Every structure is written in C-alpha cells, then in structure tokens.
Image: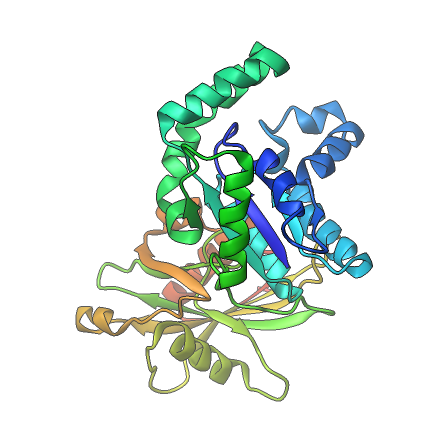
Length: 340
C-alpha cells in the first residue's frame, strides 16, 4: 500500500511523513523527488529545456510507479510518499499504474488555511533560502486551481493549528479507518500486443462522445480490450453498455483499423473504431458512468477533441470521421492510411 500525502509546497508533508513512520509499523518513506532528481541528472539539456518541471516528463511518472513496485517487492510496506501532485492527469497516470499492479493508494490532502500556509513558507526561507520560498509561493495559484479535484479525490486534513506529530496522529487514525482509499479500476498492464475496440457516438451536431478515465491521463473513446474469443464488434457494444449504460441495437459498422506500433512504454496492437451512430438527446439522461473507471463524459467537435485526445487518437479520429463521410472503412498503420 502507498499512503500519498498531497498538498501545496510548504504544507508540511515531509515533516508529517517522518512522524507517521513512527506510528505505522513497517512503513518506509518513499520520496518520488529522489526519482526525479536522478532522472534530471541523466537527461540531456535539450530534453530538459522542453519541460517546466520534472513531473512533466512521462519517464518520471513511469519511474514513480516502477520504483514503488520494486520497493514493495523488498519490504512489506506501506510506503509513505510526501509528494505534491497538482495535475490531475498525472495523478491518473500514477495512481492508475499503481492500481494496475494491485497496489492500493490512500490519498490525503494536507490543507492548512492560506494564512498558516504562507507563514510556514516564510519560516522555510530562514533555513532553505528565498529561492525555495519563491518556488513555494509561485506554485500557490496552481495549487488553488487544483483544489476542486484534490478535495474530491483525497481525504482532507486541516493542519492549520497542528504540529507535525498531531498531523501524523490524525493521518494514522485515518489510515486505519480506511479513509482516502483511491477507488479506481484495476486494469492489469498488457503483456503482449492487444486488440481494442472503440465506438464513436454522435449528437445531433455531429460532435463525438468522449470519456475521461480515472486510471490514465487524457480522454478516450468509449471502448476497451477485446476479450479472448470475443468478436470485436460485440466487444465494442459490450464496452459501451458497461461504460455508459447505453444499449446499442445491432452491430456497429467498422470505420478504421489502426495498427499501433510497440514502443518502449507499451506493446501496441490493433485499434478498431466503430460507428455507433447518432444519439437522441433523450438518451443523454441514460448515461451512467462507473465511478471507479470513468470520471466524466462530453461531446466534442473535431477541433475540441484535438485538445483532449493523445496525438495517436487524434489521427485515428480524423480518419474515422473521413471514413464515415465516405461510407467505407480505412486501414491505418500508426495513424496513416495504407493500401487505399
């Protein structure tokens, strides 16, 4: 298990974590900052110039998960991770990766009132210098912007008038009660190339329906992995029913087959998109998301979808829309038509 202590820079996460070690037998401090520091040393300056923070590196997010897995293979746990995590899609990626490896997360937000928070940041300047103080203060707007999703996702502990020991005692009690458990789908990572089927559903303005998974970054098409022995079109219909609560009649028409090449981070495989047709407005009320898997859904124009989807999915959508207009399926390799 991982106990993730989140909050603003300067909220007292690290001092509370050290106190918490004494209250939870077998616990070990896990500092993802150390992972980032070593990664920062190894990457060339040209790559580092492209990001503002080590958390923006996909490699950091993967290593945070892989390092936790490696540590828990050596020690019983729990791991206590005092780490500010303010970008929701990074939370999805990390917590989703941990869930896929059957590692539960208890997520806590240490939230002192702003007056107390700023006072603590000022106190840090005496020992750590003005550069650290300015760093903490500079990230307060990002922290404020993230509070809505943080408060909904994590168990909040008001630490305004608490010492680190008192904070740790409250956290230890909350851990034992099972507070802050991250309810997230546990999808095992693929061990080979996979076959996945997605469905494009449209409204009366020809906008496409997208969903926001809780377990990985970015938006997606409704759909999922085709089970062994399952027909892809039937898998697409099944996934729409499971994810959205919508029952499609008949089997949807194929729009694109896209071969996604393997990379260092994933195995790739075949990705199919089917045409689920247009939904009447009356059916919008039928949409019921599984909370542990999907956070939200929306209809998006092609231009809006480009801001929500990953580049490979944008290419897939672009060609699927053209296939739909032409009334014929397209064969793609890495998002590019072949054999047309």
